Image 1 (cartoon, one colour):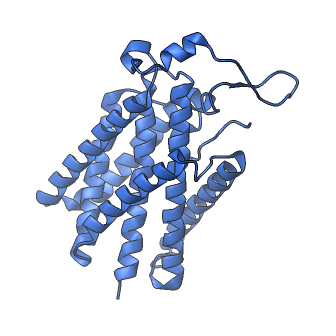
Image 2 (tube, one colour):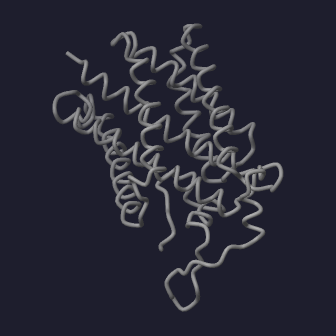
Image 3 (tube, rainbow, N blue to C red):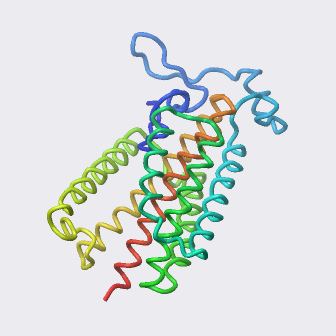
Length: 272
C-alpha cells in the first residue's frame, strides 16, 4: 500500500508527511510490498480510550478538532468585528498578510499557537470584508455560503468515515494533479487581469464560469477528504502533540478555500 499524500501544502512535508501512510504498515527493504505487522502492545496502550494528547505526548484527532474549533471561532470573531465596525475595506491588505503568513507557516511548519491563531484572525478580517461585499450585492449569500461549507465538510467526513470514498494512491494523485492545475489556471488568470479587465473571463458568469466554480467546489471538497485521511493517519502513527495546531491550520486553509469558492459559485448562480 502506497503512502497517502495530500495536496494541502501544510501536509506535504515533515512529520505529518512521514506519518501519512496507514498505521501498522512498514516498507521492507529491497522494494518489497508493504506487509502488515503484528499489534504492538505499547501502540495499543496509546490508542486506548483513556489516551489523550496530554497523557501520551502524541497528537490525537480530538486534539485537532478542538484546535480547529478555536481557529474557526477566531475567524468568526474577527470577521464579525470587521463586518459590524465597517472595516470591510481592509479585506485586500488582510488577504495579502494572510497569504504571506500562510506560506511562512506552511514552509517552516510552524506549530506555535500564537502564529496560527494570528493567521486565523487575519483570515477573519479578509473573509468578513469580502463577505460583506458579496452580501451587499446578493442579500442572503453569506448564510448560504456558511451553510454550504458546513454541509460539504460534514458530508465529506461522513463519506470518508463510512468508506464510501477511499483514499487510494490513484485517488490522491488525481486530486493533487487537478489541484495544481487549477492553481496554475488561477495564476494565469491573475496575470491576464493586469492587461485585460476580468482576465480570461473565467468567473464572469455564464456556463463557463459556473462550470469552473462547480469544479473548484468539488476539488476543494475532495481535498477535505485528503486532509481528514492525513490527520487520521498522522494521529495513529504517533505524530507529536504540538503538530495538532499545524494539522488544524492545514484543515482550516482548505475550509477557507471551500467557502470562497462557494461564495463565487453562488454569486454567479444569482447574477443577472
